[in-house]
Image (cartoon, rainbow, N blue to C red; front, side, top):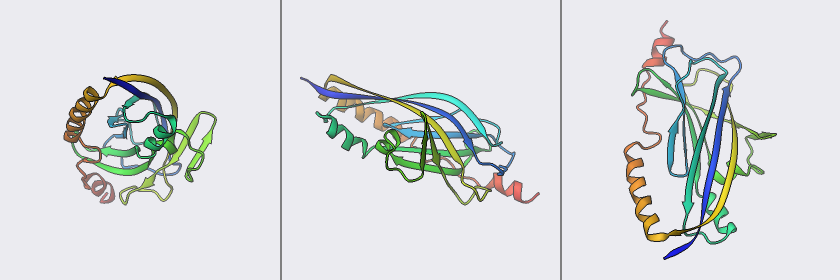
Length: 192
């Protein structure tokens, strides 16, 4: 039996990562891995020179089937997470995480009370947390643009539950944050 649900669609534009005065190791390109709304996505790989200009657009969407009102949807968005990792790759399967950012999806999309966030126009600046492998003392800043669309729909609850179960099993196979971490890139740069 069809029931009322909300389709949340987030258009995320990854613009750049900047960190003035910081030099990354030149052995291996860097990319940004993003996770939100039960999906993982990775940008193209770029030269490890700040600022790294991405200008890539991604669309994430999810149907919330248990929520009937907007305030229930907002509570659910407070339990959904957005995560970003800056990764430097030595080859296709070995990478090191240089910096991370994580917040609730509600705080990312409606950033009125997030402390390490600066909203200027439509761009959002996120201050990432450096790992111990990041070579600089300054923290990298990730600049994003977001556009959110919430559409009221009707969906079949039983079909959505079985689809969600299948998607979660697929995502477990390539779980976010399961990057092979290798210090070889940074060992080569520090031994020169």
